[in-house]
Length: 613
Image 1 (cartoon, rainbow, N blue to C red):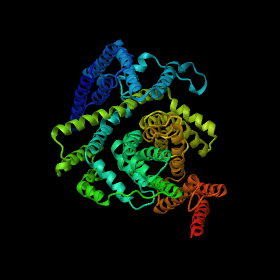
Image 2 (cartoon, rainbow, N blue to C red):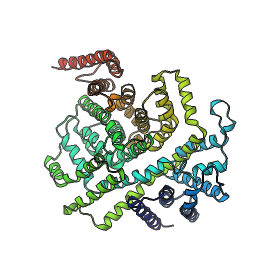
Image 3 (cartoon, helix red, strand yellow):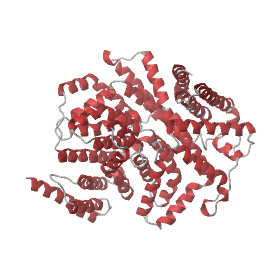
Image 4 (cartoon, rainbow, N blue to C red):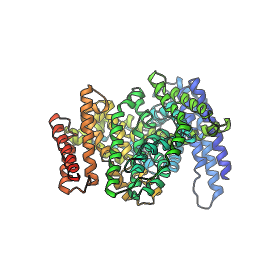
């Protein structure tokens, strides 16, 4: 099948999906209608845009893709046509038909095949493991044994109710993530992206290591557009790499900074990517609460990267890259008004409007603002094409949510989350730090090769009960899991964001991943800090919040010295070790350790400055 025909079919399918989403925004639809529309269209589009590879047998491959496309639409027709039956039947009491079982099996296979094409094998392997556990786990001894799962129960959970495939991840995608993805697509396709890059370069134009600092700021701004760590890495890396090369940054450092900065963009409010919306839904709190709690950790994270870039530039004796200040000012003046849609999102959330409304209204505001200048005007056809492109880009977010939904159905039915909770409690023997380290390792392992949203969902279902049993507030515990789900994008051996950056900078995969972990030390430490002291998330008295923020800031300064081994001259290993000790003391939520660690870091910095003078 010619590529052009595939694209036209995908375009038509996306247009139908777009129409349904816009209709649902004004006339709410049943969950068992809207969610299948989203997922079935996702599957159909993926089979058109990601052809199966059967060697040289192109006709057979095209036939397979057409069959899978038709099956996706048939499953939608079955669920949509049976809406009355599905909403009126009594789960686990009414009979499950053979047709239900057959189509459930077909749907699961379609999801896994589409996931394989878009995401690789990693999520499928995880899903297979849980499916095996669901059907054969009744034979396991000890705490992992359960009552057993058969085809009727599996179909009931996964296909006929909102407890599996159509559970909260897909529900959040349909009600929130889709509309913010659309908003991001319009931001990326309009001169707003040019504005963000110009602002970043202008703010750092006279600063040591300005190109690297501009990269950090741009990563945060573009994180609001892409909602994807690898996507953000690719966008910022492609845009900023020439400037980084001209400044003299090592290719390995540049690649690591693109990966860590791009990943960190998902942590920066007000728009933090799809995972934050899923988290708000799972915890049951307004999204604005999630955004508020992320403010101080985001400042520390960005500050850590800026400090690391500064030390690296000073260590290497780099010169500032000359930028055309006049051109940057001209660009910012020309498009400054395109920043308003970002503020409008925050405004609508503050006054209590829904996430869907905030995203759609801000998208409309952006479209209208683009009409102000001739250079940025977009026609109705361009608006439609941008909307379709945004819809298609949502495929990569919906697929991991669907696979995660299958896993959720198995976990909830078998009670595996509570069993994991008991296992962690047993292994950690009541030690909070040991339990947190164990949870961190498990999250990173589960997140290898997975999109952030899927890694977070898996972690929340399996480890959420365990963290709550350790008397960690749900918001704090989920933020902990959210951070390490993001960190899994930069941790070898499977580090998707690092791989993306390595391809841009032509560096080794492993060396890029290790360099990224080195400069992301703060990101590894921040979650432990706010678990021990939730004031870092803005929870508590102003004095507590101020104290933990200042001590963390000092700790970040110290960790920068440890990782680079430089500040106004090379540090000895003894100095680096002492610095590490003082930095770790600042993490412990005790006043006396804060005082000792703070005095220690300030003394080291003052001593190095005095030595230079």
